[in-house]
Length: 324
Length: 52
Image (spheres, each protein chain N blue to C red):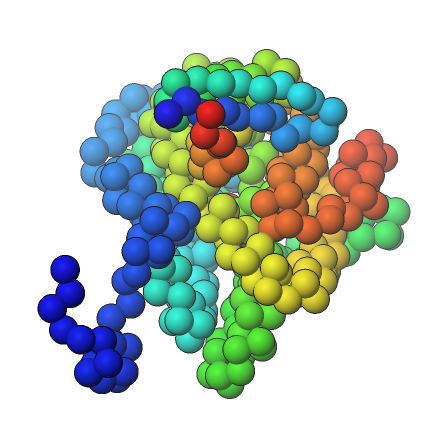
C-alpha cells in the first residue's frame, strides 16, 4: 500500500523509476525473464566427440563444413558489434522494457560468437584471426547470370548503414525519426538477417551433420542458438509492429530494406548447392515461410513478387550467408 | 488454462489444443515438421497461443 500522497511527489524523482505493472506483464519483459530462465553456457558443452569426428571426415567435407562455420564465426561477431544502436534508441524512446530485454540479446550474441570461437579452437584447432581467415570462402562478387539482381553484403554493409542511421536519429532526438530508423534497422537485423536469410542455413548444418552422423555438439550449439534467435526475431518484429501501429507509414521502411537486398534473399543459400544430397527447393520454400511469418508478426503485407522470385527455380545463383 | 495453437501456414487450418504450453509447442513443432517439412521455433509458437 502506498504511504506517500501522489501530489507531493517531485516529477524528477518519479522519472528515476521505470518499472510499471503493465510493463512487467508485457511480452517484451516476458522475453527477458525467459532469457534468464533458459540461460546456457558454452563452457558446459563437451566438444570431445566433435574433435574425434573431425579427424575421420575427408578433406572435401572439412572444407565444406568449415566454409559454413567460419562464416557463422565472423557473422556472430559482427551482429554482436552492431546491436548497440538499438539499445541507445530504446533508451531514447523511453522503452525501458526494450532496453532490459536487449541486455540479454547482446549477451546472447556475444555467447554465440563464443560458441563458434570455442568450436573452432577445440575441434579444428584454429582461433587467431589469421588462422580462421584462411578458411573464409571469398566468393568475389556474386553475379546473377540473368543480370536482374545485385547481391550485396548485408552483414558488413546493411547493418552498419542502418545502425549509423539509427544512431544519428537517436542523437537528433526527434521521436518520429528515431522510430522510423528503428523500424529500418530492425527490418534489416531481426527480420531480414535473423528471421529469413539465416534460418535455412541453420537447418542445412543440422541436416548435414545429422546425415553424416557426426558433430553432435555443433548441432546442439545450433539448436541452442536457434532458441535464443527465436526471442531476438520476435522482439524485433513485435517492436516493429508496435511502431507501425503508431504510424503506418513506417511499413514502407521494411519493404525498402527487403527490396534493397532482394538479390540476397532470392539466391540460394551458401552450400545449398555445395553439400551433395540436399533438397534445394526445401530451403527456398522455408525462406518463403519465414518471410510470410515475419510479415505477419510485423503486421505488414508480404511482397508477392519477392515470394515468386524466391520460388523461381531458374534463379539459382549462390549467396554467402553469415548468420544472425 | 488450456492453450490453442492455430497453424499460420497458407491454406492450413490445423488447430491444436493442449493442457499446457510445453505440450502445445511440442505438438505444433511436430505438425510443422510433418505437414510442412519445416520447423518452427518455440518463441514463434508461444507468441500466437490463445487461452481456451
